Structures are given as C-alpha cells and as structure tokens.
Amino acid sequence: MFKNIMVPVDLAHLETLEPALSVVADMAKQYDAKITYVGVTANTPTSIARTPQEYEQKLDAFAQDRHKVHGQPVSIKVYSSTDPVANVDDLLVKAIDETGADLVMMATHLPRHLDIVMPSHGGKVATHTDASVFLLRPSK
Image (tube, rainbow, N blue to C red; front, side, top):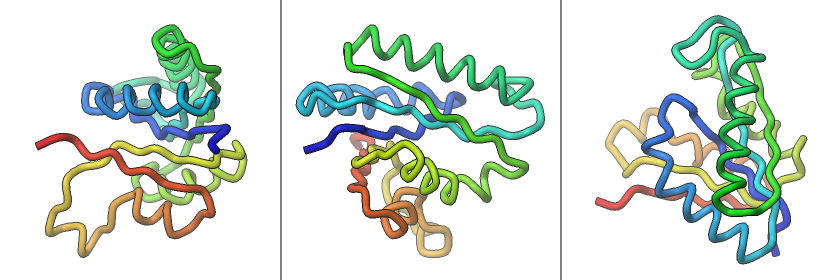
C-alpha cells in the first residue's frame, strides 16, 4: 500500500521523536517501504549546524543510523530557508511532491488551546496534499 514514507525530522528534538520513529520503522517493514527523512534548516548558523550543508550531513548520518536499526532503504531531503518556522509547512508539502511520498508520518503534540489560532503542522500538511498523513502523538 505504501512505497515511500516521508518523516519530517527536527534534529534539535530527536529525543521527542524516538517513539514515533519506532512506529515508522514498523510501518516501513510492514509495507517494505523506503523511508525519506526530511529536514528544514535555516540559511544561517543554528545550534545544530553552521551551514545547510553541515545540516544535510548530520541528517544523512541520522538516516544511516536509523537504517541500521530497521534495515529499510532510506533517503534524505533538506530544505534551507530564511525563516524555517514560517516556511516549514509549505516546504513539507513541496517535499511530498518532490520525493513522491505516499505516506507522511509526523510526530506531534497533544492538542492545546493555542491550536485554534496556530494549527499544527500535520493538520496543514494534510489539507494541502493527496498523500496520507499519520500524526503520531506521544503517550500521556
């Protein structure tokens, strides 16, 4: 059913992604799917990388480490932006088209009152693509 699972990754918050990443691995094994890890970084130095190229190297290293865990084929896609917070949703939709992902699996937070004013990334992505979007919430 699924051939390419896209997973947005924030390298600054890997510890919060870990539970979702194990579900992604299980799903990829179930459908013998490739996993494409997507990252969005700033054009300027961040706490993770000084340049977009360094960020890409770190995301690739992350993807290769995950491949050792689950054994499924992996690829990466990195976008750099002058304002990653403002552009992340549009860049994720672009990544779905460019990578040919048919399923997007995103770690998310529990619903909050602020979501009325500022909707979640997953909600916006789901309304702007034909790919299935699976939001993975943390356990309480």
